[in-house]
Amino acid sequence: MPSDEPHGGESDSEAGELADLRARLSAVEAHEARLAEELRARPPRHRVRSAFAVLLVLLACLLTPLGAVAVWAKSEVSDTDRYVATMAPLARNPAVRAAVTNRVTDEIVKQLPVDSLLDDVAPDDRPKLGALLSGIGQALGDGIAGFVHTQVGRIVDSDAFATVWTDANREAHAAIDRMLTGQGGGAVEIKGNTVVLDLAPLIARVKTALVDNGLSIASKIPEIHTSYTLVQSDAVPKVRTGLRVLDVAGFWVPVLAVACAAGGVLLAVRRRRAVVAAALGMAAGALLLGIGLSVFRAVYLDALPAGVDQAAAQAIYDTLVHYLRSAVRVVVALGLLVALGAWISGSGRRAGTVRGMWRAGLGAARRVAERAGLRLGPVGRFVHRWKAWLGWAAVAGAALAFVLWDRPTALVTLCLALGLVGVLAVLELLDEPGRVEGG
Figure 1 (cartoon, rainbow, N blue to C red):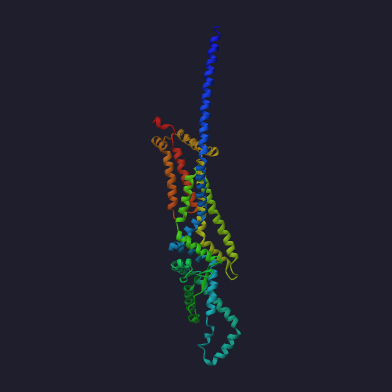
Figure 2: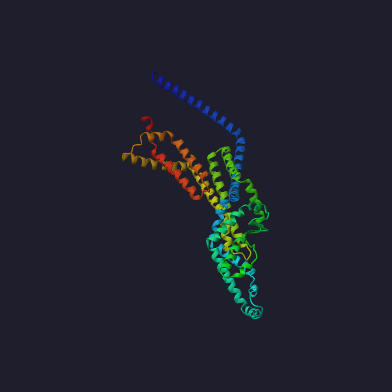
């Protein structure tokens, strides 16, 4: 029986191993049971956190378009130079120049005292001259109207009109608050559903030019306060109220939107996904605002009375909302970039593949440089040790530059993003993994 002893020893050993495996399996099952119990106990708390996170992210998405409008309203109301800079290009717009020329010409022709031409004629000659004027009245009226139109056109096409337009808007800016509250007065005011600009300074210049060019009867034209329509819509009273509220809220609305997004991300169980959702949602909110501006533009132009110059009205509308549209493009671009950055830095398989391709490509470029004789030495070791901190410093610098930039555009946002990517690429190229220990 010596042969039986090893066999018995093997049986005992196998039995011991089996018992050990069963014990370990029982321990694992017990651990899983405890985890399951903990998970069953956690959902209510997680559901509350998730609900609040979703609520805050949704609130951030809703506040994003309101924040863009609030910043636009606040900047146009509180900054005179910015408002004048917004309106100044209209003085060079052909459609606006043509509309102003026609409007001023009509008002001056209406007020020209043609009958006073007989005042300086001898009493005996007045009947004959009166009969002559009656015969050529239509031609005379057309000739005077053409002469006035030419003189007005010269002034409107000159730098003088740009000066008058700028001065009028600069003076009008003091009345913007009254405009928003619906009170009268100032060069810009709301009359019912119409926002108008008084062209009296321009007409005064035209009167002087007419007299200087031989039309002496123009000196008898009384002071004319004619209104040039900037905006005309039945929605003006409602828009006025909304702009007043947003003007009071000012820059706090976008700050609140960002705070809600940050709070939603911090409360979320999966924060990286929350960042992606918040960024895309806020970009979508801004995009809806941009679509709304385009839709309202078409509706607004279609609703204008027949006598309003469509081309001029279109130019004025596009000028007034130019920076608001720019803000929409910036928010959309920034949202997409943040969402892309959060996704790439995540743990997903595709994101990992993208990061791997990035590192592999830059690593190959670094190895080629090393074979060509480039040695980074202490620089490579320093970057390898502090690369994470240097990367976050680059991100913070790009964010600070964006915040401090005066009216950043979508192009500025894209350039800052590309600059950040370039800095991160340089850090990856300068990194020498595994060189710290080796000196």
